[in-house]
Length: 207
Image 1 (cartoon, rainbow, N blue to C red):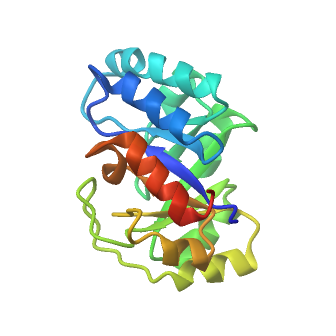
Image 2: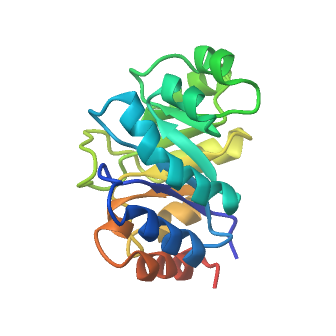
């Protein structure tokens, strides 16, 4: 058994049938999927809020944290559980002031131990390392080795998230290195989401 959990990241298109797909994925991953990141780009806040509403309700009903990507103002408008900040998306301290003490604030740290320590000092609730593998969801030139997860887990209490091209076939070394969460997107949404969640469950050791 492992304590590693899944952190689902939405595709850029969350319209149409996507709420049904999310519901199936969350139900298949009960106890394994504990966070969902709402990641849409290039749409106005009003439209983003409309798309987020049914997804946020699905997460709330299943006690899954609803995290907004990059946009503190949208997270505040939605009353989201938290926000995920890239390196250019603002300061965790500012996000904390706007979203409150209870908000979950995550920070992308690429392959940098220094950035991760800075994020922790600034009050981040989790740090994300990656991309560990080539990703079709988001391009990244950063390629950390799994031992960065072991290093972090051995020194700090703050959870670490592994991200980037993670599939059921390649996730095991990241779990064994100490990832608290695997952030996954394309490997779930590019096929049968229920089968993908079950395959992750088997590899993570939740079966």
